[in-house]
Length: 288
Image (cartoon, rainbow, N blue to C red; front, side, top):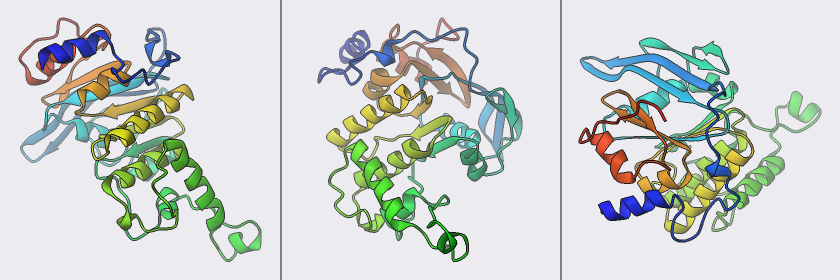
């Protein structure tokens, strides 16, 4: 296992062929750039349990930042704090240099932060198109939309179909079918397509390939790199180390409710990352 991990570190792209042949994921991190999203001193307690313990976070423009950590390390709580699903007890979050205090995920979404949650956050009884446009429905032009509030379902279905086609989820035949009729992988694809379609400043993906098959996982990784090419920074939370080392520019290692270190996947192995996560090894560098 360790040998395989070390080999994966020497070649960040998988043996099946590079996902990013143009090298967008190989650019060096710009140390002069200002972070687009930061957190300082985040603390969140649930009774006697401290989920976040004076946690710091930095996301730079145009990068894919992977967040990894053992179960219970506080990764999900950190992401929920960044996207407004959880209000931290202490600390500060800044977006593009301005302090933000999101009371709910809608405010974060309006600010340009789009999230794919681990539980997908889809409404099973609604159609694929309705789920993609939930809370931002397209209304018909003229009096039918402004007065009678009628939805332009044809327009929504066209956009939904286009986004799913970009993702390569061609197994979905009817864009108007209820989400509850889809497989787990297809549901994940709908959630990922929604985030890629509407994220304007930051896209957060919490375990986006966890429920996907090999082919769909490959297309999601390709979509992640496509989103990056359009200039959007991405936060990728994942337990899949090969995927993390394949697409990430930097890796944020979370341990015991705080940022332990940030490593460069080109200079560290998967075995190093796992050792840092579990406490078996102490990182020499605090930041990548």
